[in-house]
Amino acid sequence: MTIGEDPSPSHLSTFDVAAEFEQALGCPFDPGTGMSLAGGVRADELEAEPTAAYEAAWAAGLHQHIVPGSEGGRLTSFESMLGVVRAASRRDLAVTIGFGSTLLAAMPIWLWGDEEQRSRVAELILQGAWGTAAISEKAAGSDLLATGTRATAITDGYVLDGEKWLVGNGQRSSFATVLAASEPSFGLFLVDFAAVDDDAVKRLPKVPTHGLRGHDLSGFILDDCRVGADAVLGRQGRGVEMVTGMLQFTRTMVGGTSLGAADTALRIALRHARSRVLYGSPSLEIAPVRSLLARAFADVLVAECTELAAARALDVARQRMPLWSAVAKYVVPAFCVDAVNDCGEVLSARAYLREGVAHGAFQKLARDIAITPVFEGTQLVQLDTIRAQLANGVRRLGTREAGPELSPALLFGFGEQPMSPPSPRDHRPSITYGGVDEVTDLLDDAAGALDDDPELAALARLLRAARDQTRETFRRIGAQRTAEAYDAARRHCLVHAGACCLHTWIQRRHALGGLATDRAWLSVALRRVLARLGSPAEPDWEAEDQLVRRLADLDDDDQAFSLVPLRLAAQHREPTPA
Image (cartoon, rainbow, N blue to C red; front, side):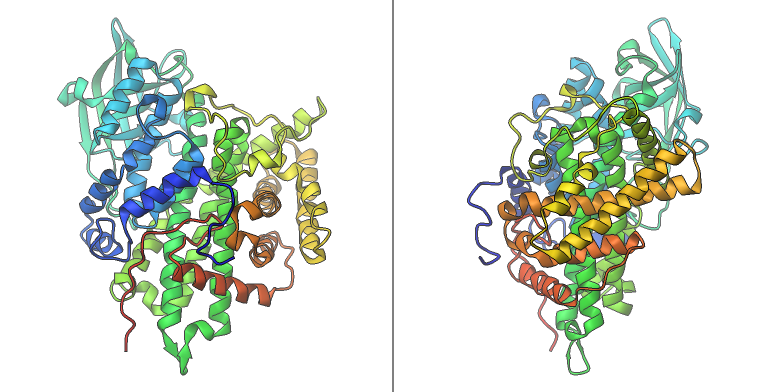
């Protein structure tokens, strides 16, 4: 089977939306497209909004994928949404993050809003309006219980007072979901800025940033801002709980932005290595260069398996997302940032230039992707969430016999539309994951399924041993906040990522076809995970060479650097220098 052939006799329907969106945007390497890399660099140099890129994204319907189908939009599957996010992020993270901030603001409305609230926000977004999630404050940081903004009850509603800072779309937003201290506890409030007095909202200046210079990261002050009783979202006093729940969706989608950016970084580095002549031959023929590209590609594939599983779980296993979304948020941006850094080594000095290779886009991309581990909660915040979830899971295991409840065929059935994927309101977020973790619980079965490949089976057993060690740590220390606990949470994330690779190989390689059926990717991917766990295996040089060949073939055939068979918009290639 060649890369360009149909990868499967069955139709992988959830990938169709991303393919349609990708074609509508055109090639980012073509300076004539609205979301071109060249245009993004020009806007970044001016620290200006990438207006042409936003217009191209709107024209392709990116905003429609923020609104559920039940509210008139095109969001019917989070797996499909992931594909759209990745496609947009191949071009400009400033655009994707802007729309992501609107998604973060809208998600609690889809989850807990009444019919009128949902209708109003859907109308605004479909008309092209921005939203902001007004959660962050300068003094509070990630400590939601330190929120200083207050909502004081009055006869016909509430008065909001306080300052929100470092919030996306703070200057340009038409609506906001505001976390505020109130009675009996914290609440979430929907503020339609068109319906409040002009002098009740003071917009704060855009904050200068290292990366994402075109993104509106700013804030606003609420001063005697009066809203009606109908501004309350869900049950009063459940604001912190609702923020925790909505983050399960948005922190999962952050991984899509990282994957899209990593695809472009790999493409820039690969094309440079193929055309750059050193010592009489292309630099791609230099062994360390090939190794850097192979390992960067493997890191992206580890991140992809983890992210695909998390996005699919939002459709079929939402009860596990208190744990799995935090794990995905920890793993995916980190692996993608490492991949981009390796690509920077391939480019060498050209990685720092604001001109030349790919119109100087790499230095912008490297600055932009560096923030993805911080958005929707820093790495330390994720580790604390994972630590608490796993400690709670250990306690639950002591009260009942728990085992896998969801089949790996369902959890890793990438590309297959579930019979009826739930809309956000159909299955609201849980606070805990229930003590059952099929991804790591089923590692024993995955290792057993590799008996015909002793080398891969040995790698799987190392991963299983790391899982057992991590579980024993949490049985021993429980909910303690020690350095050992946080390291165990980190190790759990890596075990989860490796397990996602194994389950993807076992459950979906034949359906996905192409690269997914080549054991080379799994061999290098598992080694990348085990190295981070402190259990390094001998390099598989042959598999690394094979991955580089695959990378080149995918680029030649205008395919995404992915296990998912996705044809890109026809690729624009600059003439090779004489």
